[in-house]
Length: 271
Length: 241
Image 1 (cartoon, rainbow over the protein chains, first blue to last red):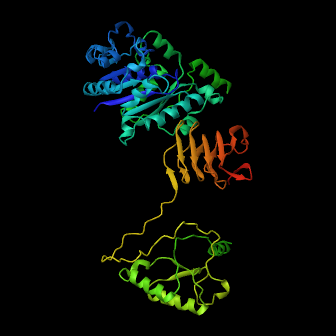
Image 2: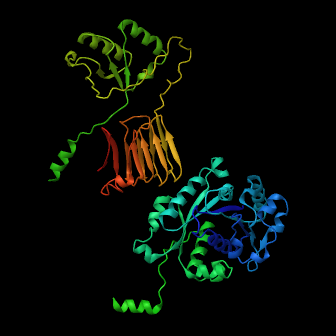
């Protein structure tokens, strides 16, 4: 049974594209057939994060308009053969996205893939509503700060009312993924705590991704962080989140600052 | 020591409220009783086990006549729990106690239990049309950007109301989670409406167009259970507990 996931947030810059790529690669790494779709028509990014920008020929809009067939537009990842990308168009505007066109593409992909991950653009406009339209489950990417959390709350409301599943009276399964979590800043009260975020959103937690240089380093070389440095803290957090998506029970770890062994020895002596 | 504690425990009183049918005899009583027999003759158990109060406001009976009526009803398996609508001076030992209620329920029309004429052959009559209470209950959290508008009465929200969400009610608003958005109660001009919430972090509270913004809500009340009501033209907010 194929699962259609939407990665969404309302607010921009919280890590939707990074998370789409990292989770897509983590799921594909474990053997599942995965396709990631970039819905950010006009401002596409997912191709860059996956390092596929130089191989884009056709895109989502081409498929909707009938210029290309779906298999022609899918780009297979060079590192993981069961990870595919359906890129967004950079030149068209998002009005070219139609509900019927998206429905047809999703239906066709459901037959070939285990996971269909839709990377939503920021905002609540057409691209974002169509990205969530046919989702079975949603990952709401949230930074631990008030504006991001309020936007996420708004998005959860839309997921409960504007998706095809909600209109049929069913429920879109929802997960909160907290990204850019900075344990020392949270301890100093400069960020919302994990509990605050979950209390406001009253939605189950999928994972906590720590703020890390590794994320930027990976996207600069065009690789999901889960492939670029699988042992780094954010990569491990994404792998755990991917396993929870598959229904496995993985204990939640609140990331703490990584300190060198000398640091640890020193602090122990001082104490 | 423990004995005393136990004794004190046995002396506890608890106020309780129950639902009761109030039956309202109309003069002349003899005709009213025969009408009652005609309507309920086929379903004698209708009042069995029910709490029944006798509302005598429509008739003027002596103490003896009241005793007679109560006995007549008991013959029909209608046990009278209490009497209302009489001058307490008319009460005599042996009569059911006089009930007083400080709240007069203002139902537009009494619920019609006795269907006008045309008794059907079926023993089971259709249940009397229940009056739907004017209230709306929402079990899910109300999210940012969502707006709940219910002018007909009270709104009860079991979850929380997100920042940027809005509740508008003709009656009172009850929020069992945190209230972080806006709540506008008594929106139809009902100054007696109130707002209750488990945790007040509201952006705006309003009753009948008198409002307070977050800035005007005292810090000592924030994040605590609170209620808001209207006193004259001032919106009052206080903590509960």
